[in-house]
Length: 309
DNA sequence: AAGACGAAAGTGGTTGA
DNA sequence: TCAACAACTTTCGTCTT
Image (cartoon, rainbow, N blue to C red; front, side):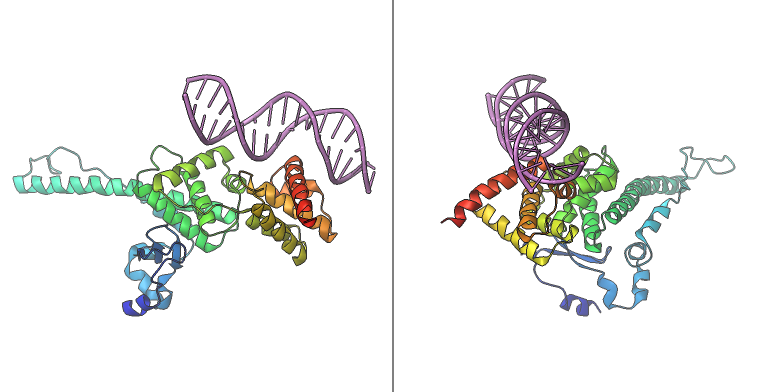
C-alpha cells in the first residue's frame, strides 16, 4: 500500500523544482517543503475508504463530509484538577497518588494548550472555506491556503492578529501560488475585510514565512476580463498580444497589472468591433476609467510607433 | 444623451532620512 | 516619525458619436 502510493508521487516540485517534498498524511497531501504549494491531494484516494478511519485526524479532514464539521470540535467540557491534594472525602493523598495527580495536571495543562491551538485552527478552517467559497476557488486553493495557515500557526504568527485577516491573507497567497486569478479587492470583499487589512496581513505572512509568491501578470487578468465580458477568442488573442508588446516596450513596469489588462482588453474590444465601454471594463477590472485611459493612451502611442517601423 | 477625454486635486501606502 | 513620492482615484468640464 505504502509503496504503491510512493510510486505515484512526483520526485520534484513542479513549481520550484525542489526535491524537498513533505508527505503530510494528516491532511492527505504532498506539499513542497520549499514553496509550500500543494502538489497532490487526497492521497488516500488510492486506498479503500476505511483507511481514513484508522487516523482520527484524517477522518476529520478532507475526505469525510464538509470541513465545517470541524467546528463541532468544541468539546467544551474542560475540567480542572484542583490544587488541593485531597481526595473526594477530604483525606490527604498518599505520596504516590500525589505524584500521579501532579502528572495528570501537567498533561491536562498541555492538552488544554493544544486545544486552544486546535480551536484556532478549527475557526480558521471554517473562515478559509467560507472565503474560498465566496471566491469560487478550486479545491487546491483551499488546500494550499490551509497549509499556509498551518504554517503561520506553527511560527506563532497568528497570536494577537485577527483570524479572519490571516485566513484572507492565506487565501490570497494560495490564489497566487495556484495561479488562480483573484484580486486583493475580491479577496477582501469575500472576507468582509478592508483591502488595507488583507493587504497588510498578506505582506506580513509573505515576509515572515519567506514565501516566494509569483507576481500576478496583466495577462492573467486580461484572460479573465475577456471571459467575463463574454468576448470572442479573437479578442483574447489581441489583448494578449498587446500585453506582450507592452511588456517588451517596458510599458508595464511599475504599473498595476489590472489597469494594464483593462486597457489591453479595451483595445481588443475596439479592434474586434465588439465594443465595450470603458466604464464596463473598469468596473470588472476594479480600476477607474481614467486609469484605463492613461494606460490605453501610452499603449496606443507606443504601439502606433511600432506599426510604422 | 451617453461615452470618451484629460486636467487637477486628492488618497493611501511605501520609502528613506 | 515625517515628508517626499509614485500610482491610482475622484471630480468635473469639454468634446465626440
